[in-house]
Length: 348
Image (cartoon, rainbow, N blue to C red; front, side):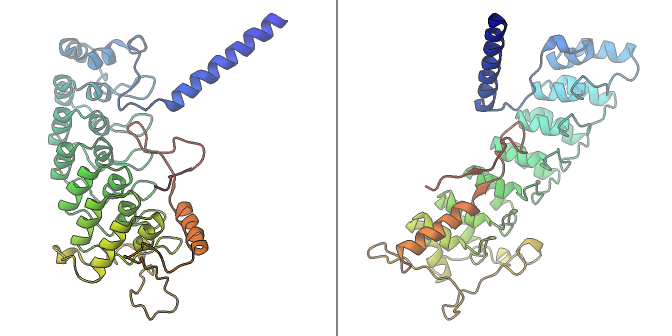
């Protein structure tokens, strides 16, 4: 009995360690594939054996869109490995370009995840839909943002990918880029006309996220493009207050200069406050200092102090921390929920 109990405890401990390792490991963009699990046709596509694939297509009916145990087609498997010759062959045999795997991902999304640009181009040229979403409501462009691949992003935009598509947490590709500190991608999207007034599920604007992540280049670019600095999140906090409570005096000063007209608006057509967005209706705050209900926090440039008392600053900082909860941990494999509880982003 003791031996059985010891064996059981050892097995449970091993399983727990295995689970812990899986949680800590960074998800990979491709599939975890055991070649022994794949049937001949799917294995040939995965390995890039074009001759075998063509032979099987010729002698077997209805095999081109057949699924493996995880609902993946040969096209999915070929795209994750960058097997462009197999992809072209499958397309020649009229495969379903927009088939989805068990996570709702199309072959195009998998090719983008794995940064297989040739496969991405081939799929788009033959009519793959760049705006289909997976189970987390994320498009191929969202995954291009996570991969920080501006070349693939440009290809997607060339084929009419929606730069304003929102995933289940209301992140547009631009908001996701700023949230994930993909500065080059954020700049690319802004310069290519992404809506700088979009807000996420918690009414956080691109400017708020850029301020929180201490991204001065993005903050300055947003201000130059005419971003609305008066938007409030669900807790009534503005980007200016984000900068103040986080202690980012340089970002606070940028916003103050913007309000004073010291930062020129280089994109007048983008100065619209984004009133077409339903998320920000009624969320504008007047900048006049005579409004008694407005919260005004001014940094004293001489000594770095604030007009609010330290106690009030601490209370408001806690509200900012509450506001900046991360609902998910978007990485390559899944933009849906990866944890069982929300993670609080540390204040810098």
